[in-house]
Image (cartoon, rainbow, N blue to C red; front, side):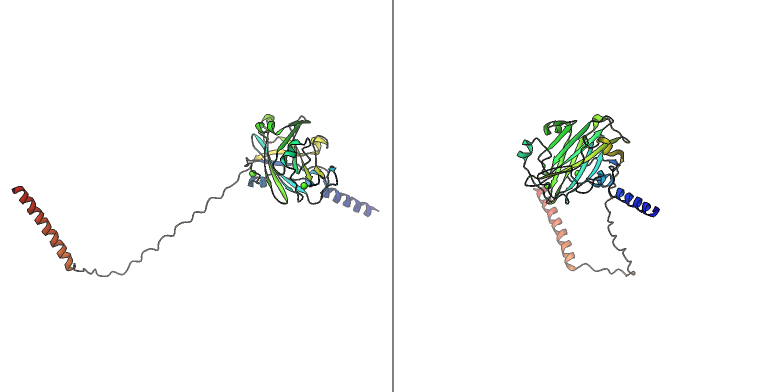
Length: 291
Ligand SMILES: [Ca+2]
Ligand SMILES: [Ca+2]
């Protein structure tokens, strides 16, 4: 009986380890990347979080769907983080083989920003629970903000410093986000809270929303705690200096007696003509003086 209980305990522990109940926490590095939709080298030296596994939810799970949910098994997203004195930067690489462009006009006219292939970031900065949601669409049509339930339009966000850069591929897309943090007075060692949400739509309007929302899915207690860490130093390798090969040292030839070649006869004639023209010029001068 004891053996069965022990085996059951081991099995339960293995299941718990396979599906972590809590979100992964970590430390993010300080570095200013280029906002271009490309993953800067520094992101690889900072924290990486997966949409499913690091948020403690099974792969493919979605918490909201509309229509018949699109293929849930082939979508995924990973997020990398950096920060500096002014901004948090998040680079999100999304696998979405059923990528569908709703068009800018539709995006602008829709009240529900999640009804598109898009990424949403949820943050809590500081101690008071005041969340910020910031999203970007796969095809770069726009961004959307929300603070404690109040929508903030893109034309308000941009002057505040919020920005995104999107790169769209055939089997997915990548979004690089920039979120201003100066107003929170954050410094190294402070902790912020984060969840990631992925909206997956298809051309027929079917929708599945995966990930977590901070305001109604357990709040900061259910989010990843991100600690602001040390600066990341990217070592740029010195360009290799190729030294010019020195010419081979001259080999001293065995001393050979110098042979003095007599000047050719023409040389004598040239000198002679030279002297003659000098004399005649002098003569001309003399002649001229006499006159
Ligand atoms: Ca970049
Ligand atoms: Ca999709």
